[in-house]
Length: 617
Ligand code: AGP
Image (cartoon, rainbow, N blue to C red; front, side, top):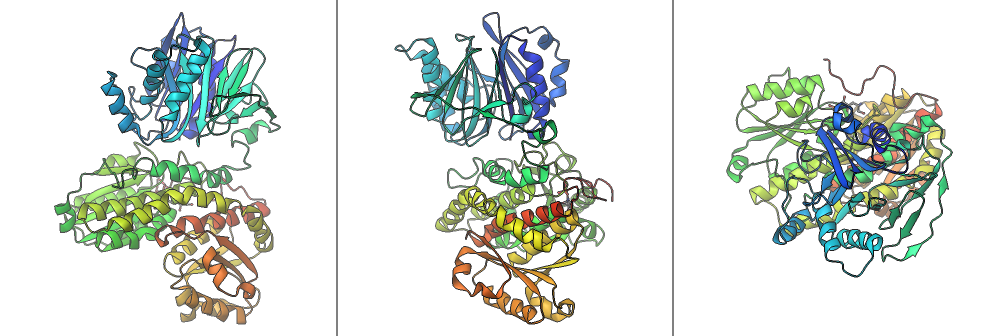
């Protein structure tokens, strides 16, 4: 997830662009850059590191151009570096582009362009875009300049597979800028004699409250006094603007009341960007790893080690990793693992999950594993974090920075990435059948849509939250991966609503804990696995006879199959592959915890006693 900003008007563009990037740093900050049209050429200034580094570039101060684009990056392709920073330009410098999203077919496009004589200087997917535009622009002899520019951008984006929000500058069109989006956010701010572009409203809300929200594959040709809109067939049309009534505080959360709610709603994008281009050839791609079949065949054990929600992500994928790799896989809490002298040697692969990459216990466990000869693989959401610098290998979720203390989008992205890793291990080992992989991959590609579907049940979840928010105890029950979801849902509730809660294996209840069930106690039963549902229903019936108030979280097919009248509340989630059900099922329970905490008037983003990253033991 990256941040993009653009400006065209009568003021010096650079200060507006830098201020906008600073507001968008929550979307990514491993490198940043700007491009401004000045004296008939496109001047690009960029560097690795945070936006603040741009303020130190002297040349930017001397740029007086009044049209420009800017970008703050969250690397998906190519490590954070100056050459991989955006804007990316065409070989001849005639076009500059900033891009948020992922071009899944960039490898093929790169080859096509190289055959046409283009060269590439970065390892980004984005660099194909300005060169495609240049190619089509140079080969268009029928249109006059402005429409030639629009046609070139249209022909270029027609070749892109994936998600994109792009801003384009053209040296030959110094009084225009073109923007277009598909699946990545982009808004246009309407000014007087000037116009603004941004990934989201907060970056430019201080300049205007009138916005155009571009739909997928709509093009906009901006000049200082006008904005022309074209549909996906380049048919020009008039677009109505919206007026935003947010206050500045709400703006930082892009209109959401809290970062946590915003991040819950960002999960479809986070999952889509974490999948990225790893599966578009049917073979699960992890260029960051060089595990050989022989190395994996010699492995005796995989440990997944983490804390809190990250540990739950490991639990959610343990059986998938075992299913595909046939290697015994254990999940451990880092603060326990590091003190129990675990049996580890060079035949052990240790995987460490950490959103922040700074959790002290997890880093300590990693160091211990290395001392004992294990290979170590870090999974983090922050490029260049401590844990990734310590590990032998690192792979990244692309959830974008997660601000709220309660982890949501990082969790579902971790499960997504770990499932891809499981497929990769199986494919290297030659353990998996093609149709088994393609079935799971197809389900995975459907995940963003299914999560978007679940997010539409928010109003129902809000109503249940109103019934539960004064409770003192809530139990979450589940079997198999639903038990993991129960644990994660319980942690979400505890950490932001301060209500005591337990995630419990449904089959274990009768071995003691059922003594706590009495009239009015709230129990949330999670049932998404057809093979286990009958058992969990009988557990739920046992507690209903003891007076419990029950909420059932059911997959659609189970909902249609069972008598749901015994439950007080229902939450239905779409069916998906068992390996992925914890992603779909946790979303309404994240929302439930959120709305319960809101009903209690608590600070959801900064819960008491908690820090976003526990860098001390
Ligand atoms: C999650 O909602 C909690 N804030 C906490 O359990 C967190 O998952 C844990 O501290 C691990 O953090 P990390 O992923 O940054 O290592």
